[in-house]
Length: 105
Image (cartoon, rainbow, N blue to C red; front, side, top):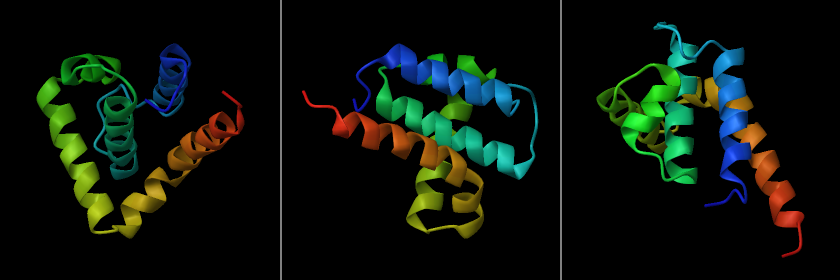
């Protein structure tokens, strides 16, 4: 895990979910892309199950699994629309990582 405090990480994720209404039904592409990014980030940074992650968004485990696969595919093919849609979130988490890396252990 990259984050020293999982609860702080999850608070940040919950803030983004609420801010962008990612927990309400919507097929707007920019919103689905942000959900895919957060599914993947939550899976990488926590020990949450697919079902637990889905609970934050009002989605089931299969939707989370599918979203993570789509995230991986979009990243692999360097999809410009996807990268543009997730850029803000990616920058937020990269800034956190740079801050954490600067803290002496």
